[in-house]
Amino acid sequence: MSELFGVEGKAVLVTGGSRGIGLMLAGAFAQAGARVYIAARDEARCRAAAGETGAHPIAVDLTAAGGLERVREAIQARESALDVLIHNAAMQWRAPLREHTGPNWSRTLDLNLRVPFELTLELLPLLEASASPENPARVIHVGSGDGLRVPALETYAYGASKAGLHHLTRHLARRLSRRHITVNAIAPGPFETEMLAPVIEDYGDQVVESIPLKRFGASADIAGVALMFASRAGSFITGAVLPVDGGMSTCGG
Ligand SMILES: NC(=O)c1ccc[n+]([C@@H]2O[C@H](COP(=O)([O-])OP(=O)(O)OC[C@H]3O[C@@H](n4cnc5c(N)ncnc54)[C@H](OP(=O)(O)O)[C@@H]3O)[C@@H](O)[C@H]2O)c1
Image 1: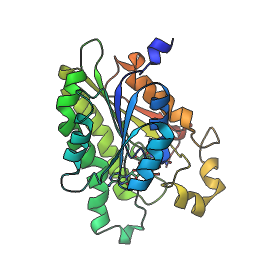
Image 2 (image 1 turned 60 degrees about the horizontal axis):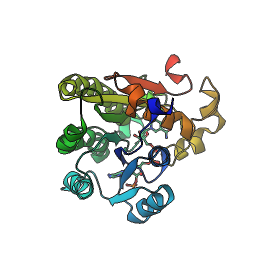
Image 3 (image 1 turned 90 degrees about the vertical axis):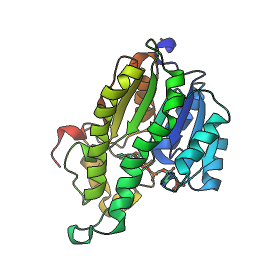
């Protein structure tokens, strides 16, 4: 059974692994015996998270000039191949319709959509070095329920970026299958992280009330699905967008 979901000895990069969902994923993969790399801007938090999980920290702004090359160089310094690439770093921006303009539009699209695409390209040689027909390399996008259905809150740019990421999942899955690289997405519902904190502050119990299973997502919920996509169990799946949302995708916006 453990062979089915095993990731021992795999090299794994989790962007945004210093807190929230990324930290949950980094911790679970490290505990399962993977060599984990986490990338985030705040160096102190990145190092603290690395210390907590046993991961290797890469302090970097993924949207900055040269940021993606720095990530590749940091991984190449220790690894000849990358087995699992998890694109998790993202920003959420909430603003009323009339104020939903200006630089935050491009910042949101840049980090949430361009960066995953270009980081995959940057790391393609390392992914190809790991890929084989029996054991493909894995790319995992962390999307969002807000990209599956119309969000209840005014997150126009964020929702569009995540819907775009889900579509990119299918497009890249088709293109990269010939290189033995799978591309899948997890679309989380509400998890109690810093990103969700302002929503919980404004809407309190209504958030949990809106989830059919009546609770927030937990670390094991998201980690279990990522481990599945990254292990033998997920090696024949590509182009999937899997909601991990306590049933929210069955509801209207
Ligand atoms: N929480 C939820 O309820 C929820 C629901 C649906 C989907 N999601 C998705 O799940 C993922 C993780 O969300 P979260 O709630 O854990 O978010 P979070 O608590 O805000 O964490 C975001 C992570 O990304 C890093 N990051 C942000 N901007 C970056 C940049 N420019 N370069 C490098 N790293 C950067 C942050 O570290 P630094 O700030 O130090 O850079 C942090 O490690 C996101 O893709 C989000 O859209 C979350």
